[in-house]
Amino acid sequence: MAESLNGKTVVENKGTENAFNPVPDSERKSLISLTFVLAGYPIALSNFVIGGAVGVGMTFPKAVMTLLVGNGVLMAIVLATGYMAFKTGLSTSFLSRRAFGKRGSSIFSILLAISSVTWISLNGDIFARLIKSTFSWWTLPVSITAIICIALWTQSAIRGYKGLEIISFLGVPAALVLSLVGVFAVGRATGGFGEVLSYIPAKPISFAAATSSIIGGWVFGATITPDVCRFAKSTRDLVIAGIAAFSIGCLGLQFAGALVAISTGNGDFTVAMAALGLSLVAFFAAIFCLWTTQDNNIYGASLAIQNILEETKLKGKIQHKHIALVIAGLAAVFAALGIYKHILPIIQFLSLLIPPVSGLIIGEEFFVKNSKEKLNVNAIALVSWLIAGVASYISLKADVFVPPIVGIVTSCLVYVILSKLFDKKVKSA
Image 1 (cartoon, rainbow, N blue to C red):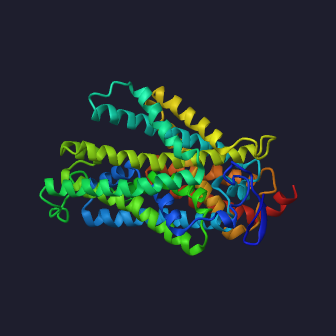
Image 2 (cartoon, rainbow, N blue to C red; image 1 turned 120 degrees about the vertical axis):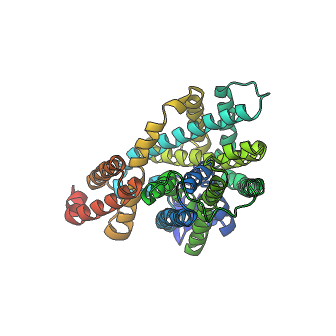
Image 3 (cartoon, rainbow, N blue to C red; image 1 turned 45 degrees about the vertical axis):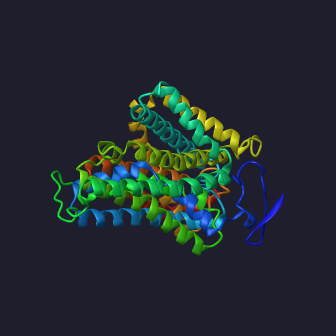
């Protein structure tokens, strides 16, 4: 079936969520839909935790400034990569071809899929433990409970963008309302937030450490937002939706976490709520926070796998829902096996390698402007990626600046410089 994208004809692959082709004009979404689906991803419990850690470690004015700076960086990444997705109609994995080449991008896609699976399994394990601790009558073991949780998240992911849209329209307002109820309840229980402005942290943390937590915690999410941004109808819609979504999902929840942490002296939102007898409010907020995030992870991983299959005989033959089920199944197995105990080093390793890809894509699109999507492998991109990963690792070990940002800036600069020097040789090779 042929459709148009800005006057160009594209061919739709049924059941693959436009994984191989630009999203056609007829399937672009409204501003409201785009905002809700984009907001669903960063509305997560981890943002309460991040905000809480920043809140208890800084004075309130410094915490607010840090939250604004950290989230400003995340929004800049969302808008830069999101603009490319809007313009081309391509997902994150297929955008990476413009820098890595057709087969080179498969390496990134594999890491993207692995990262998504690890996050899904980790959150499945965490939520299963929360259920066990909240309801004494729940008799199923953590392993089976985790599998059930992941199976629920999969229900919206297998339905593609439409599924994400449905759960986001339900989950985003519910998560926000329940979160606000919790924050106001904490305010009442602690006599209001009057002492917030005069708060002095017992164990101060530095601006660099705080911004590292904020940016590092959600740079992966910002990196894969093109998967949703490709459905935008206009640049205006993209900018409004991107800023609104991350202002609500990241900045908003982190701010709430900081307020609760300063008022209760506890940086963990759910623990603070439980101490005040509000476990059920925290639990139901967690349901929606996790669902709207993890179905996005499953969806993004499916698109990454389709990018790998594009260069094989299986292109277009395996539907999105089947890949999503396999991804969710793997995550469920890992969660049931207790991957929670072993997964953190994996996540830390991936957090150093995935963000630099944004720098490569940005460098190619805005500065080099010589797409490598028809090449098999672009060695310049791989070398730049490796150098950026090393720079990120050094930044992490030396505790200097923000490792993900070091990676993004390094990959962009190195890629642009090497491309200007050797691009002609690469293109003719």
